[in-house]
Image 1: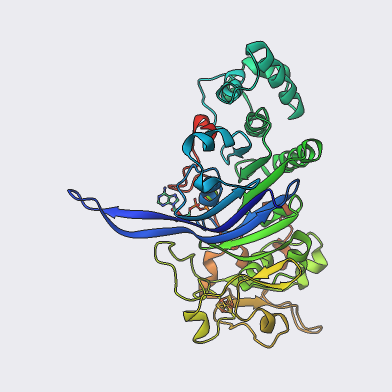
Image 2 (image 1 turned 120 degrees about the vertical axis):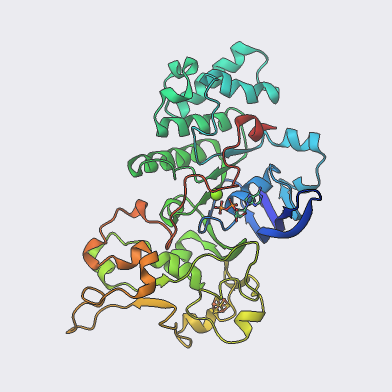
Length: 407
Ligand SMILES: Nc1ncnc2c1ncn2[C@@H]1O[C@H](COP(=O)(O)OP(=O)(O)O)[C@@H](O)[C@H]1O
Ligand code: SF4
Ligand SMILES: [Mg+2]
């Protein structure tokens, strides 16, 4: 049995309007039918552009956001159906690490007080002395000095603050930690340290992670399984290696092609698919396949009218595309107007893209104008195609205070 199983989870936010009478005029379909399983001791990486519903899904698991419908089965219990008091107790076992460490730590509390608060709420440690001993032990585990106890969040660097956020989760001895963009706010050089720490802790403590990121490079090495989300739903899911070796959904292929490869020879010769257009609004998602407005492989009729279901193509490889097989074997080719597909140059031709002017639609995607020589960007700085992620997406609720994460 999986430790966490989501069955057709939906989170629809009502859009209200009106001065005197509050009328519901529509819904934001932030999460619209997600089913996935996270195995104990493993890491599930959830990726997708900003606004596709990742944070909402993470918060829904902890019921920090109301679930519209569906099941969240954690260790055999449907959390969505639990009475509030039982849910509050269950939260000890499910913790969240937030994107913005400073925003999620109360600036007026010292570290001991921040960490002890959740412990006291969940009855961990008989008294202050016992709690302090446990906090000191956890601080050491996450690589912080014991004197951090009496200091305040602003006295630490970004990376250290994220370690405090991790320690705050760990003192409660959770089974599952949802890490929402755990390194997005950190310098590239610090990102790897925090990811490595998460991996070490997983090995030592047998933790299970759901790691959310808009950056494929971040989840790649840490994840056992990766799910790719687009407009509130999964479009592809596979074991990490398989997803990278054989991405099958057009959206995943486009995302993948935006990540530079460290080997310059491979980098110069690989296929690049540059997505045109913006992410449609989740308040008014396209009919049929939600990706059809941007899909370079879109086929008439069916793509516009019938929503593809996540279907198993090979062992553990699920894809939501009507034409995944035809696209994989080349029977269906992408349309050039929708995707600038930069193919490897012919042997005696000049390199494609190096001397051609950029197309009109390409200016919105920073990656698109990068010539071969500019591809030396560090892997970890690669972002999803065209996704300039704001540090704090509006309405994402990621500035939740510590108390909110513990219930
Ligand atoms: N409390 C809320 N009320 C209304 N809309 C919301 C709320 N929280 C998030 N949204 C919307 O839901 C969509 C998904 O948001 P979010 O889950 O934060 O995406 P991500 O984490 O992938 O960037 C966005 O369009 C966002 O504006
Ligand atoms: S179903 Fe059609 S529009 Fe959707 S990803 Fe597949 S080919 Fe593209
Ligand atoms: Mg988010």
